[in-house]
Length: 200
Image (cartoon, rainbow, N blue to C red; front, top):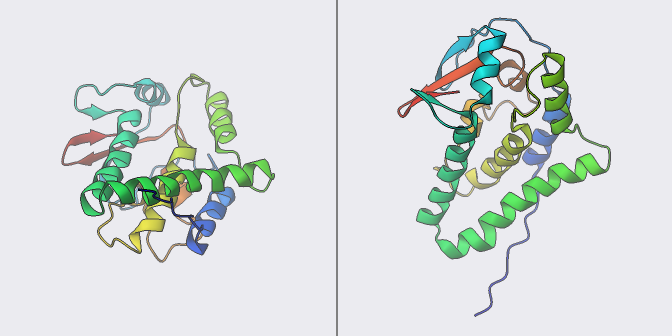
């Protein structure tokens, strides 16, 4: 049998999200307390030293889920949903090509000089606050899977919007208005709770 992978067309909504990340004034809210509502309950950490210590963890500890595990959880939920709902063939021929296409859409903008290099944003942030350069904030991976969620939620209303919910990305917000309010903007870390425990 021959199976052909579906060509993924980047939607207008996905393009708007790509553009919204370029428009964020990264680190512009440093030191400002965050008091907005979030999909998840959260605890705000105000000590810069504590934030660095938390971000340096690459394994879960105590009742805290490290950042690496948080991203793995979000990705695993998307994988599991597609496999259980649409099956292995769809996963191989449509889902994985979408994951790749989402990354290529981001990379293409960077290579053309038309988009913000999120790896450079992370590096500048860490250097500015004197954080360990080995810390990974995974902004580009976050953007990649936001695009994946946007692509599939039209076809699958129950598709898990893990990253969208963390980012408070409501369907009415198309220009990144909430993004800079919540994610890696300052030495103020947000610890999110869900049913499994504490999530950074």
